[in-house]
Every structure is written in C-alpha cells, then in structure tokens.
Amino acid sequence: MQEIERKFLVASESFKEEAFSKTHMVQGFLNTHPERTVRVRLHNNVGFLTVKGKSSKSGTTRFEWEKAISKNEAENLLLLCEKGIIDKIRYKIKHKAHVFEVDEFLGDNEGLIVAEVELASENEHFEKPDWLGEEVTGQVQYYNSQLSKHPYKNWNH
Image (cartoon, rainbow, N blue to C red; front, side, top):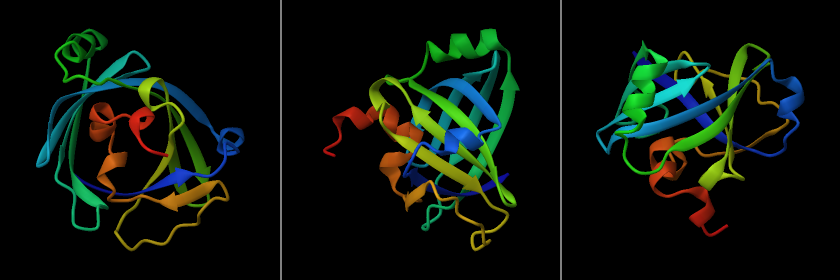
C-alpha cells in the first residue's frame, strides 16, 4: 500500500501521439489535511475513494489506499467535497519498461500538464521520454489536493 512515484512537468504535447489510453476524470477532496487526504474520483462511470498519507521527505513515497465505489456513490460524495473540483484528462503512455500517466488539466488548472511514473523503489532507474520536462516530485503545489485550493490560473507564471 505504499505508492512510489516521481512527478514531472511536460515539455511538449507529443505524448498524445504515444497514448494508448485517454480518460476524462473529475475528482474532489473530502479532506486535505497535511497528514492525509481523502479523495473522491469519477472516471469511466466508476468511482473511487482514495486515502493518501503524508509524503516522505523526498516526496516520492506515501501510503495509499483505494476502493472502487459506484458512480452514484461517487457523484453523491463529490457534492460533499471541499471547494475546488479537479477536472482533467489522463493519458497513459508506455515508454520502455514503464507506464507514464499524464494529466492535462482543465478548468481552473488549464494550461498545466503533469506526468507521473510509478516505481518499485525510490531509486529505480527509468528511461525518460523526450516530452518529459522539469521534475517537480515533492513540490506540494503540484499535488491535486493543492491545485483544488490554489489553482494554476492564479499562479504567477
């Protein structure tokens, strides 16, 4: 139940040509406490309830628990979420031995594109695709829970 991942900005949209999956997602947060977040997500008519713990110092590792719930349950829980719903399109791209998940944000976070890769260990080697940009692992402002409170459109960039 440990999640180990690294997060990067995306330097170009060429990843879209390599995607084997494209999914629209809506998610909200029932709790965004620094020690834990509780997320509700709806995609492909399936809901998910996810609890994430505090990140390690490096920002790569944290506890994650997830349970599938019905579309109806997710829709009802989304109504109870804190202000700031995340709306995004997720692309999945296989590159060498890994699958990258690339989130193209919509709404208040439009213009932000972030890629994540899950790893088996913190120092696992992986090949970086050409479209991968600056690493932002552990930078809290890129967490979805923070983007819901402080959207990308309000950043100084």
